[in-house]
Image (tube, rainbow, N blue to C red; front, side, top):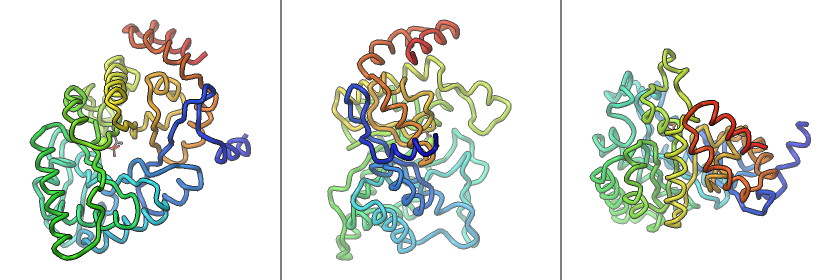
Length: 325
Ligand code: PEP
Ligand code: MG
């Protein structure tokens, strides 16, 4: 069984009815890229850069240190795309650095986290942006921004990206001036104004972990409400189907990089919604690929509407059973 799964590494990733699918990896450490590549990932869909900043005994990594880590991933991926997500601290991820007054512990999920925090610490953000930009001279490093919801945050983010480019230009340091910039769609407000994001970004990635948290008002870290954290809640399925459809219609690359993308029991559902780009922990790549090879997207697409129309749990269970058949 394991041997069979391993053989899948070498096969093309396409459905039984020949729809090409792209599988990307989520990584937390640069070394994870080695496994991702071995298992056939066609890029890094999510590099959680905050892991370079967390649980540190020394000060935060400086530009050179960050650049060398980002470049390592880019080099390991041999020209394949690498989405470097800018620092996503706060809530479940605490930023701790000895000898620094920067600390992000105990921040509420609704608080000053991710891009909100980065925009209040422009020097730290600019340092990270310069490091990513410099890595883009060596391969396909791309910038991915977490937790955006407001047009003003988008303006400010692009203003700082331009400033980082200018600074490098003045220093005479190399970078890709056309670096791609993507947004994570993980706040319901962002999903509800998707055209704003489609107009301004090169690619989008749905962070279902947070999208579920914020849509259902369930703190991801609170065990007392963990039983209500439900990826199959009809509200979540409606949002996902809608985001994917709008993005596909606008011809902007759209991926899912939350845990849902790596759950093989949900692969058919996401394929049926029209999703073609999945990003997941590398341990899930072949399990999801096995589902993809067996799937018939045409058939799945015809069965998704019934799932979306099911508001009662038993009705939904039946519609899902039919989808899986
Ligand atoms: C998500 O929210 O789905 C996501 C991929 O980001 P993280 O889990 O790191 O918040
Ligand atoms: Mg998230």
